[in-house]
Length: 186
Length: 419
Image: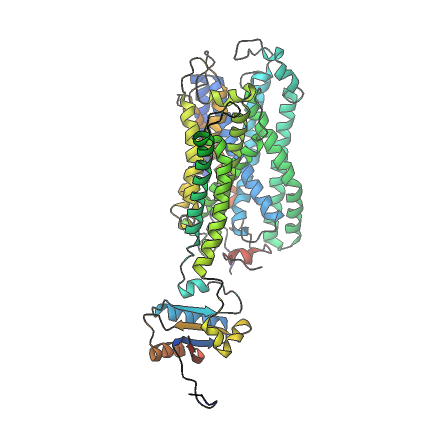
């Protein structure tokens, strides 16, 4: 059935609620309230980085270092085993009167590989954790979203948050000082 | 922010008492174990404390040359510690006297009649000495040592004067002057610390070659100075002085520097070992062979275990601990890691100095021996004097450089510091 322009478009599926804030402190304190209310699936949209917002949102430290450490260990082990396998196992060869294998001469290469694999793992881990590149996000449908890149601050609470309830969440955002509260379409 | 009031000096008398007691105990060592043992102990202890001082001087200069903001509140404590240099110079005088009155007792090359360890001739007939004698002679040693202390004391004087004067008038000219002194002082300090460690320590075994030696000492100085710094920070926090001044991001930054210099130390130390191991030239390998097995019977000696302790304790343990973010912020744990690094820096100096002295078989002196007591006494004694100098200076100025142009930036230091 064709929609007429005057009708409110029927929503396929709700993504969540968006609320606008005018100043950094307003957003900061609103984030603290949302955090304290126990929400986990939500985000703040700001035109620039806001110091201390991670703590106000209750964001924990990034999990990327775990990828880095894993990459480093794999890189080091790769270097050591590659040199052991090529020089002492698969094709044993005496070079410069040294033993077939020694961690001494294997160390520089293992060290370089540890750094290389750490760098790879860090970048791959970063993209896995932040799920970039992301070509579509429901907030892009909200017309007010463009101001998140200019002079306004937003909080988006997702509908898949266990605590999400359209009425209660809207009330929380209103109480936290949010305005232009709107429901987002998936 | 209201200006912190000058703080009552804590326990300066105790520090000086420990200093005097340690020095007196080392003097007793002269009569119990002989002059050579006591003088070696004195050399280890002096190098240890001078190393920490050089590291702090470098940190102050690095702060100024990069126009750093975050470390402003920490810099003041290093400036206080720099007051120790003039006392360290005074405490070095006995070694210089020894060089002139008993040549060859510590640095064998100072006496041409000193027999070589392998029993073939004396220093005076040793081509490896004669080729190096333009550098390795007593006049150079004395003149250069005086020049090193002149550089360190002079730079310390200007950095302290400029910073303390700024507390009074808030004039930016002091900061600009510090930057110029840092630009001139960094290469001067780099050269002086390199030549100092070559003269004082490396020349104990003058046959040896290593182009990494100065860099190795630099890495050790930086690690010990950063660790001492972090201990001072947390001490001041626990006392209450640094509440509201020191935040997690300061600790995080200084912890990151501790981590990077741990890696740097390992890189340099490994490179030195690896190149010598790979080239396998006797003039170089003997240095490590002596620190692994006895010359006479080829049996492993204590230095092998000290060397392994350095490998695992000076690199792997602090490296793995400092990788961990919460540890760098823990006011309980980061001073402990710092204390461990300082201890291992001391052990590293023992590893470099003590085996240079041989028994009558030509084997290196063991690490665990009664003479170690005098080393500990001398370290406590000179340390007492250094701490006393720090505390004495601490009581004379503001807690932090309150009128430094970067002080607000430092007090509000944030991890993702926007310009």
